[in-house]
Length: 501
Image (cartoon, rainbow, N blue to C red; front, side):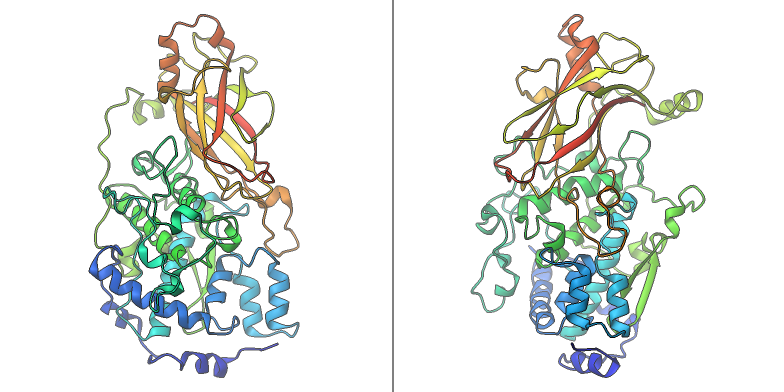
């Protein structure tokens, strides 16, 4: 087994024309991160392709290697972290073995970690990968381009860029991966044939809080479980972008996360606030370890990753705050006053069994809980609160490979209408993965996998239909696959609730 030391590290770096003692301020030569559909973005993409080729040629124990950065996110799903560390480093203690043990498989939060770590961890990952690209190519002006899959331009919206679809091209071929969905590598919109538009981020970009708040999903988790997970599932197979252990081996991964990061930076520019109170949110003190491009360890807290201005980079454009029509629901200020006078959340209905999803529509009965107020429509009241449909504890034994679409209906045989459509879910972060530690247990490795939607308007629409007593005691949630799911996935939703908040 090869053991790396400073001499072998520098030898690997010497393969690239780069003066290694570059000070951080030299990176100011880099321009803003650009859309790869622009000339500036395509120029950066060519540098990135060159870096991928050079990184793949380096030994996996080299912190500039492609394998190192793939494994920083998650190790190959066909084996385990411990097995890979033993294969690469042997059993003899070494500095790089220690670093790999600490840093590999630390993707947040897809194996039970705090859901609010998703954005800062991936920002840090993309930032230091960007610096590695500069190191191996000698291009201090490199900035990570982004894939603008939410563009209003039909030629871009949901379409994998052509540079990632040319396996035999001498420049771009290194960016091609066969383990993507056929429509992605064929240049078709990855959202085609879905009953809704998965590229729509309006509801995410209008979130008021970064963190989850009772039954209401916050911006960070909405990004993670929403557009982020949807792009993974719709782009790659379960052994590619569609599966956590393989996702970072696809060169499109970094550009996807640059896009996610751009959305977060845009949300901040539009007034969204990241939490800073370490007493109220002690998780802000957690540090994430990675290696700099010179092989030295760095560990940063979330609060050190809150601002792209502080980190020294920018984007060529930002997502404007969506203009949405008034919903008629109660204002956040009023809700805060109500919450101050009574419990924040009140559960009014729950599913009577775990939902195991199949090849077709799965119907789940929601029953009024004991002592919940009986109203004209289950969950609809006049107490100045909103009603949320909440799902928790999603799990799949394998990646299903599809999105699932959620409807709230007054009866089990109700048609699947646009007025009853709630949203979609995916199981990208709901498959058990071994983090390679002694405490990798199924119940602690999945996390809550929390989804919620404001369904107040859906209940109001049901009330308009004057169904009498039929909707007072029960409603029905229908979960429908947006394609043919893997028969071995057996995805499950342990809890469904209606919550007033």
